[in-house]
Image (cartoon, rainbow, N blue to C red; front, side, top):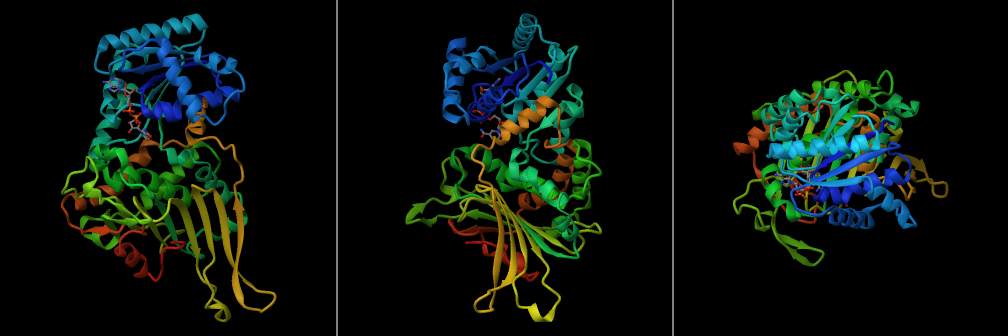
Length: 483
Ligand code: NAD
């Protein structure tokens, strides 16, 4: 791995504290950082290096997966970090940053390999990228990389504008767009499950699969994020990015080889084959909901509109369910159902693949076989089969289950940062995917904006609005595993 500089914009923020420093520290402990590296944390606040190091140390103590048994390691890690006060809109600050980066490169005798991680509000993405270029920070004799977080645009138009600005400063293969669902170990496992198992591979098509259900339900409400969430809703916060990534991972064809280009190419083909919805078809295929007030576990809970920071007449979706069709020879005729929402009964991210029933008349009444891929909070794969009870001869369900018992699984950010350091972009969203996803979602955004479809109020602590259940009933199915 190349020696390099890691420049962290937003180095005093929440994401940096909870995820990025612990990830870097764990990589460091496991010997997965370059031999020599420099980390530069940036933030708006005026603080000494010592104060900044204290903050990083606290974040490691609070959030790190590993803690070293002695102080020596953490001191060595902190030693690689410098802090610089920084305002994204002040050109002089970029010049100061450039000087600091170069001084450290000279001091450590490392090449001009620079990774810029934008852990800041998206309003700064274009300004920072432009100024990296104009200040000379991006003019290196080594490589440069840019990591950015979602949200990547607010709609198709803004995403295109942002991408065109970023691409003035960075080439596509230098941009690593984090979708942290692609950092989840079980999501990374989907491709292996499908393609390394001929048994499943043979069944992974419309001849055997009746429908696919992808759920990401949360029990929490909007919490402290109302300012952002009320502008975004479930469609932008979850659906356009994470949920469509899960769909792509599930439905993609086997790539010719396992590599970033090949896998991302197969994912792109899935989105290209998604049957477009026009505004008039949204109502038949999409359900939007918002949680109302209610009682959960004997406690009164507020409705979304009464949450602090939410507009009292807000029409924002806290739940969305949709039926999608992939018009290619493998998936034609198989509905994919996606739903995600807040204040639901259970915290669960899972994919349920429901197989067609046996054509054999003798067993017509048996349950469908199902493959359940649990992503979060548990990691498990279960195959539900039908079997005969040896004592009474009755049919019953037999579950073949694998539950990950690994206790020390790296956090998604750790896996993703490691990939970016290595230059492996397999599990980062390519611009093609982001653009096609916005393109598919745009008529839904328009229909929501124009209030063309109802906003169903749903009871907190349950499984979303009735309309989301009817969506499947229309096709003769029901959401599986709902408690
Ligand atoms: P935060 O508000 O906690 O931190 C923001 C950081 O930006 C701070 O370091 C602050 O000093 C810096 N900053 C603010 N104004 C600045 C300016 N004018 N110039 C330079 N720096 C400035 O935010 P966060 O929660 O850490 O989120 C950072 C990014 O990550 C956002 O894009 C957010 O959407 C995304 N994100 C966050 C989370 C999370 O769990 N916190 C999860 C997913 C994505």
